[in-house]
Length: 471
Image: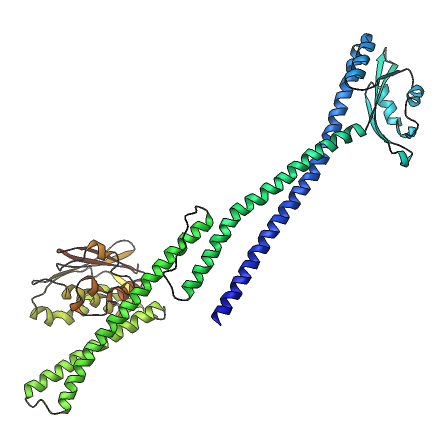
């Protein structure tokens, strides 16, 4: 079923990519063809304007050098293949028009006014006979002397001259168009073909990751956008692999931590059932051991449940204003007897004006986690210092110890998911390794943050920053 599904996905992916690439090529060809047509019309338009300008300049030059008319006429006929006629009236001009041309359209009333004003008239006229289609450009330039129309310079140029030029240009343009299409397709396949192969690799890698194979990597070193996606995917799969390994390791350790107290409880319970212990002192030790191991299991399970809820963001805090220093004192009073028995020195310097909005039970859980770690990893003469200070918008509870400390390498990952603190320090110290992860998430729920500073062999300082309530 999965193979069929993956095959269907592959087919859809391939069809989609091929369809989109074909559309891009077709659109590119259409754009080139469209540009091809526009360039042809633009070239013809440019030729018309160039011809009009050139002929007009020749006629003006003739007017300015009218005494050398025959020389100019000879030069233009020989070099430009233009016949320039000198006419003395409009009627004579009409006689020079080829018979097939509609003479009524050669000159209009406005054209006559332009001639009398000394301006050149340029018209494009068509033939009357459709079987012998002819199109001409008519140039008429007046020569004015003493404010009187003395002569007319007349030139007619067949439109076929421009069309021949257009045909030549079209052939060259067609060759360039074919070359452009070829280069476009080649460039497209060179660029997109590589991206297509990379997308195929990404697709296959995604399928492998979806199966749980986080070792899947995309091989390639391209510097384009697809290469960036590939690099991001490789980073993601590496992190997922790390998460998978940490989860597996955590579950193995958690199972071990649960099995140990269960085995002890079961063994002592069996001994009690078999009446193997008769001495009252031995019975008392047995009951104490069972109680201790049951408490240990309860703590392990509670930490696991808390972390699961925090990770799923399903824990809601019950916040209310509290005097932070008083709460700290109440929490630390629990440790008084244990501190005396174990010669733990505690120094506290607290600001009693600090009021925060917090869930008191979760706040106790945060502080106890930090204090328990300080005790667990302390030296022979443990010394714990606690200070509570405030600034304009927040307060900082600093808890320092003179314990074994944490290396810089391990400090960077000590609050990561499924990273056990006892793996960093020593497996024999026990615990789930979830304490600091829980603290970090609870701090986030309180809109605060935790900062851990430590030096191996010197001690550890944990700073808990909370927003304060401002009057």
